[in-house]
Length: 303
Image 1 (tube, helix red, strand yellow):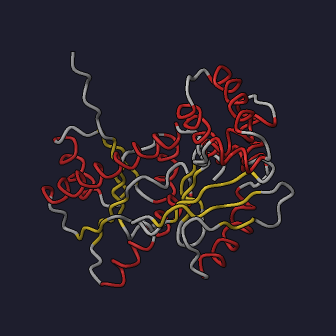
Image 2 (tube, rainbow, N blue to C red):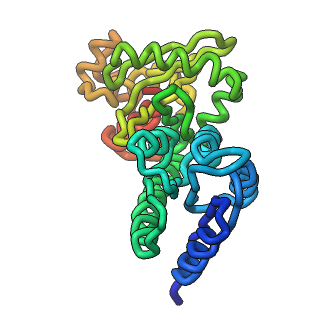
Image 3 (cartoon, rainbow, N blue to C red):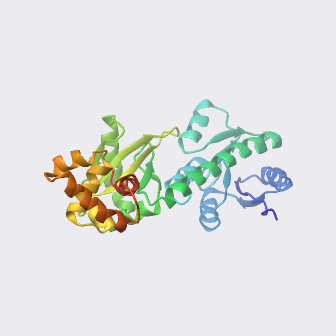
């Protein structure tokens, strides 16, 4: 039996009754669920209660215009990944740029062409699903990963990252006032991939590592726990090994032969073999290759 298709939920924000009617009819005919807001503040309330899959946003509205509304959406981690398409009669290049800088993914000028609207929505909904799938996969890995925008603001983070930030009492206020400026200064020096920055103004030590420059212009970072052991000490803690066993396994995982490991640890190759014989049953493996694989997965969490 096939699983039922997922229905996309669209939030349409416009103070024009005629525009709302046309767009509502177009979207409902395409099988989408439609939510309606007449201005920005109302849109934010609805989006927080019922997270839409995509938002169609008029630029010029009373109370709170579309540009400010989009900026507020992107500042909320729970809503930041929702694609926003601007709809407006403004055609000046500066207005288009302003919409994109506020976080919009696309810009349609009025009067709206229904076929063009649906075609563009299809592209952005597909991209958003791919992004969510990638983020869900990262969430499940247990990695302390986060992405930050051009202003150093946190755009997305795994649950493990939020937990570590909470452990360090790095709340949203600290992230805005301390984290963002520190990251901006660091980025201004164009750090290379793999470089690390120790964060300041925290009672608990945290470090970030630059993992990747994303195509979106965001930076993918890894958050490191400054009090978490590394190297052989990490293997000892995570795999319940003795100190000597963890040292042997650490060097084996780093590609050293039994003889090389023995020289580094100032012991005989025979003693290395004896330690490995104790390590294998503890890890539930039968050879050094499998043991090294377990160690490498464990060590990968610290770098």
